[in-house]
Image (cartoon, rainbow, N blue to C red):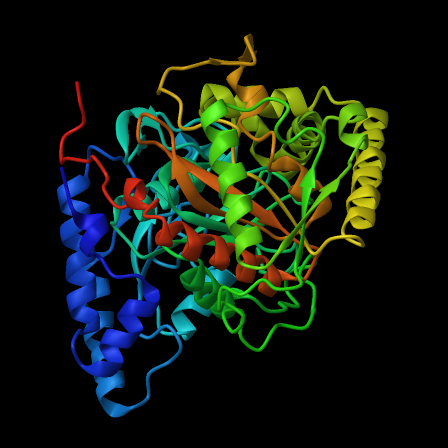
Length: 476
C-alpha cells in the first residue's frame, strides 16, 4: 500500500509552501516521481514520463520564486491526457495507429499551463481517441476495478496521489465519471471556456477540456490558468472570465437555491450512491442553501445518453475521415465506432441535434428557478475490470447504458459541471456529488462544490479517498 495520496500536497498547499520557503518545486517534482515509481505499472496511469525535463523546469521555477517573479502556477507539477499535443513529447492518442507519434506544436491548454509556470511531468493514459478502450488503467482504490474513462490516466493519477493536477477531456462524462470513481475532483467547464486547439476529440460539439485535482479550490486555481478565448479555436467563446474562480469558496451558501431533479438522475442508482448524495445535499442545506424539487420530464421522453451515442460516432467518423484508409490499424472498439458512424443517416444525426436543443431549452428553464442542480456524479461506484452489466432496482442493465447516465446531459447542454467526493460505499469505493450550473457560472459551481467538500471533511467522510491501494506490481 502507498501513502502517496496522503503526503502529496495539493496545488494550494504547494504554492503556500513555495511562498513560505518550506518547500521547493524540485521537492514537489521528486515527490511526484517517487509516487509514480511506487504505483506504476500496477496503476497503469502513466503513458510517458518526462522526468529530466520536469527536474530542469522545477529548478528554474525555484529560481523564479527566489527572485520574486513567480507566476500563478509556478512550480506546480501536472500531467496531460495523451490526447493533448505536446511538442517534442510522444502523444499517441491511446491508439496503436499513432504509437510513437511526436507532435511539433503544443496544444493551447499546454501553452497556457506552461505560461502560468506549471511543470509537465507525464502524459497520461486514455481510451483510444477518447472513445475506444483502455484495458490497463486501474482504480487506485481497488486494482481489480476500472478507473473509468476516457480520462482514465488523469483521474487515476490524481486519485492515487501521483500528481496534484491533471488535464482531461470530456465528451459525455470522460472527466467526471472516472474522477467520481477514483475519488478526485473533476471539472467540465462551459463549452467553449477552454480552448481545444491541439487536443484531439471524438466529438466537436460535445467535447470539453478541464482539470482533475484533489480539491475544489485546486480546480478553481487550475481553471483560472487554462480558461480564456482562443481565436484559433472556432468553438472558443470570448466570455468574461471571473476575476478569481476561488474567491467565493468560503463555504457559506445562504440564499443559494439548489435543484433536486425528480426525474432521471436517480431513477436507476445504487442505494449507497443515492444515500451518500442525499446526505451531501442535506449538508448543503445546512450550509445555508435551499433545496428545491425541480422537474425535467423531457428526460423521460428523450434519453440524453442515447443522443450522445448517436452524435459521437457520426462526428468521430467525420473527424477521422483522413484515417479511414488505415482503419484496420485502430483498436477493435474504436474501429467499430468509426464504422458505426458511417452508418448514421444524416436525418437521424440532425434529429438528434434538434432533440438536443429541446433538452437545452428545458434545462435553461429549470435554471431560471434555481442556481444549481445537485445530482450523482455516477449512479454506480467503480465496476470490476471485466464487468459488462450492472443490476439496479432488481434489473440487469448493460454497463455502457448507465455509466454516463448523469453526465451526458450536461455535455449536450454545454453547462459547467463538477464532481466532488461525498462519501463511499460499503467496499470503500468513492461516491461523488455532481454540481451543475448555468453556462459561464463556473464560480457558482465551484463555490457550491467547495461547500460540499468542506462539510464532508467536517464529518470525516473523505478518508476513503485519501488512501489508495496501489503497489508497484499489478495483480496477476
